[in-house]
Image 1 (cartoon, protein in one colour):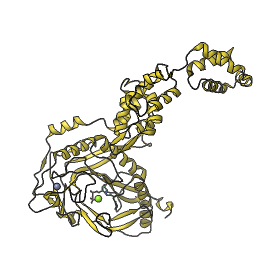
Image 2: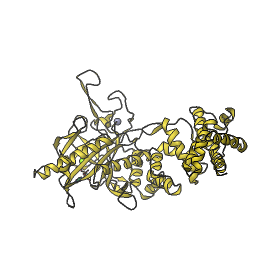
Image 3: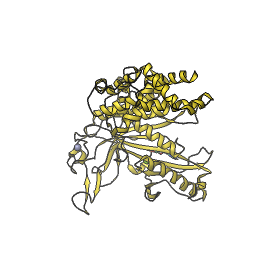
Image 4: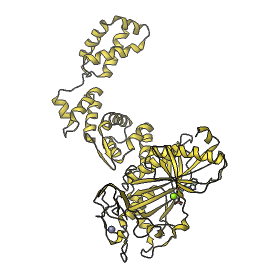
Length: 490
Ligand code: ADP
Ligand code: MG
Ligand code: ZN
């Protein structure tokens, strides 16, 4: 399919995201949500759907869901209803999923994605609704028991989910990936989800249609189910845009349907006709009372919200003058953001300190930082890093020595100042000694001296480099620069 096929058309994309809430227990029973247990060991009459077992709503899940909706600027409905979504599938023993349908607990929100075309640099994308539901079980094929055997594992059945439905306001694959990244960062910052697309705790369905550029009517959409990485989302949208454009251009008619992304083939395939909401026979679950969220309680949840990634980035860029790129890297993971705040802690409002800290954390610390889900392991503590940077600030250490000191301190609980003192690491700031060295270097490089005096001011770096080499990086560069300028001017 040629790229030209999509030229006259633009894609319209809306994403549905299902995120597992990091509660200790399931949505409507007290079974643990822990991952990786033997099949069918984390189950009880409620999540097995045995007759007569009654669901009881998990308060922790409600609290996490409400915090998420508030962070996404949604309006909270005071009285919402749980509904039964009826369908048959082996991993759904009750024959229905408890979800929310016409009265979800929240709606009308938005989040911001980067948009270079807008003067603010960002653009709002609408969130239609956030609602609570439960996960289904999982069919395992040939991986447990024995080759060729299949198992319905209900450990995941009843795990709390939130579904976040986005408005069809995304206009490109890049928009969709940006939206997903923002959403994932927000959920992870709230601590409600581990943001893991590959392991399926953050799952995305891509809805996409195409229309002639400039048109304002929506075309018929197809839904691509469970696309499980940012790269797959990007590729699936690019492929599907071109495919739909060719289909529409050829005048072929098609109905709403569900497709699947095949990453090996690099294409989507037809899965099934789209089921309409009528097919699910939604009705209010008679076992669950309405969910009532009093405004005082909701406001208390709002006060619990942490600083969100977008606000953190804004603080780093405007108050601390860091570049958008640095801010992005330093807020991309909540533990990294906390670590960086820890380094800033002694001088939280000093842009010079912030820049120095950002450079050091990004080039040194992050190189050996490992993140997994919500966890991260760091090679040093924020206090050790700020102690190293204090030595640079005081002129005791050069930048190069700071890196050496970090290499010695890394992975130990040692205090950087003591390690530096014990190793005799001090920056050379003895002006008389440095002047003598500078003179010697100028004397042995007459050609370069003549070139400098003839107007080639770039030669200064050559001399500085020599001094640094002679002193094994310990010379104070500011003093060396000043001395060389003075000596070369005479
Ligand atoms: P369903 O569960 O039936 O898929 P939802 O209302 O939960 O329905 O989700 C619909 C999703 O499809 C939303 O994310 C919405 O933005 C998107 N969508 C709706 N119409 C279109 C369209 N014409 N083109 C692209 N996306 C669309
Ligand atoms: Mg859908
Ligand atoms: Zn259970």
